[in-house]
Length: 372
Image (tube, rainbow, N blue to C red; front, side, top):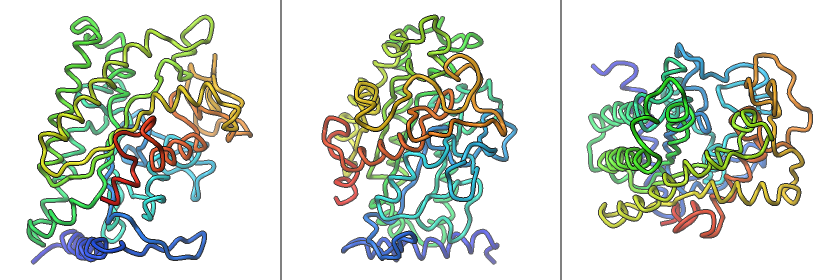
């Protein structure tokens, strides 16, 4: 007899397949609680893989220093702190709503019907490489995030059969945002030997080769619609600004990560050509940040070089501590803490990724990808 967990998974994916069938036409209906209206979901579900930029609580119960399940994190989020490294929404929260989906639950806490619209596997401090982020003790690297997805998928397939599951998964969005920690909490850390082993080009080759294998693994598990987020201007985050004498962006760090973005775009073109049926959208976070910093006031931001919550120079030497009082005008800040953007930036970037032109999302935006 199937145990309680298996029955829960069976129930949620019966509903998932019904939603997928509806999506063959106009899509499923998802009630907008704020507007009290019915809107159409563009896809059956979204599965999310990444790091603290999109983690929503998977580290909460881990023995990890990379946690955000305390106030003032979540100060502007309905229900308070959840594990999101933000004062409110992350970028994928905005994208989920634009797709017509509810907010996607964390893998560590979701069960049954909570998972019917997808699962968020992202983990703070995680990277493409398994060794990345070990300074934070526990975290869930990208490879393990894929295995977590595979574990759920195995149960689904056992109950429903491979053809039905494959048909449903092919319509879902798979959002992946990895790589930041492979620099911030690996290559740039003095307790890692990586910088002595590889120059910038060699390291980006190592990362993208592994990344390609991991994305191909997701494809082999049924993913077809991929959204890949590039790396931003990491030399401009408060943590890096605080390490400089003049408080300006580190061009050394920005140039260090540039090859990763360039090679990730080339990787996407290669995967598109070699994986039948696979479709990709690449979000150019670097370009978005360049535009935002250059035109901050036109977007409504007045503080561009320090965190809203943090301690020390640029409020970036020590990140946001429990019960610390954050800035009151959070919507005017680009950065929430030493490493992460505010909800206002996350919403802006999410909307640009969803509706934007080829300058910021290539070769198609998320809305176009979802409608394929």
